[in-house]
Image (tube, rainbow, N blue to C red; front, side, top):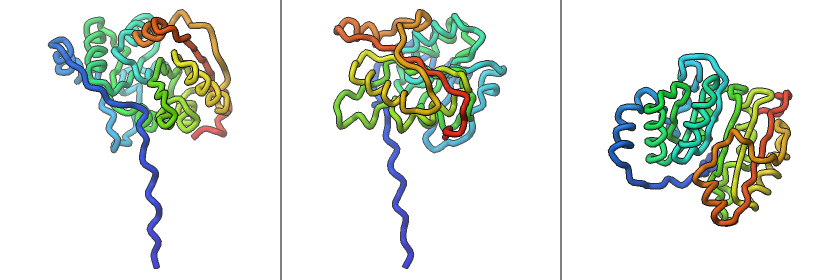
Length: 234
């Protein structure tokens, strides 16, 4: 008698797609800037993403996960022309807004991806990123939703494995309980070393950060660096 293997566990989303209105500026950006700067990350596509082909040059790459409306990403990329910024988001108005900023400011070192960041990570080569930024991800505060958090042990092997040795993972949150969970997960990842740091001046203040401050929540920045050991990489 043949035995049918158990199906693979379903992919748990770390995000909840939101709807939002788009004005003429955003709609125009999707029409005109997407062909040049956009990248669709489809769940069923495992084609390798090669940053040198995507950007048309060889340069250090920063992965921005969940960039919101993209203002901070555009500001950092403009101040850092020697590195390329691959920014991914699922919120269409945010994607459109960053596309508009990129086109208006002529930011050739930015590419805007739409889709699941975990799928994108799977399409990048190991040791291919100079830095990964995860600024104010959805905290999923209810205990039953913690499995949806992006920064957790289940995902950190993939993130750390895509960083080059010496590369940086920078996370920020305004939820103290999430900050504690982040630190515990990051400390447990053998490819990463670091901890809580004072707010780096190079990280722009984001809309989510301002909301957290207004609500009286403390801001926590965690900066970790990839070790030179590759044995534990996924």
